[in-house]
Length: 148
Image (cartoon, rainbow, N blue to C red; front, side, top):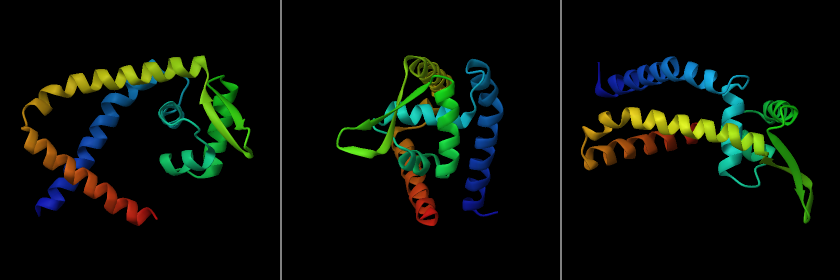
């Protein structure tokens, strides 16, 4: 097997293990929310003036799927919609106080996961990590080209 095949198999294995280990923790901490809903809330928290088009592109979902999640999150009281005075056509979304609480729980879980993994990252030099990061960014750009 070539190195590239080993790398891709390793990435797939890492992803599967991360899902297996972390998904139940996230589901327990944020009971009643799907992973897609959590990703939606995270995007809104990090990107002011999020709209359906931006959410769909960022989360790799259809506009229809985003609209369904939007309705669910509005019913749960997690988000609110608004319009800008200069653009009455477009709807934008923001987190409510309850949505901010869920986002804070999610952020804390990520910090806990990062802290738990620090021993692995500490075993690599800064140069090693830079090389890994360069690969991840290059591969993401390669995939982005296929998604266009």
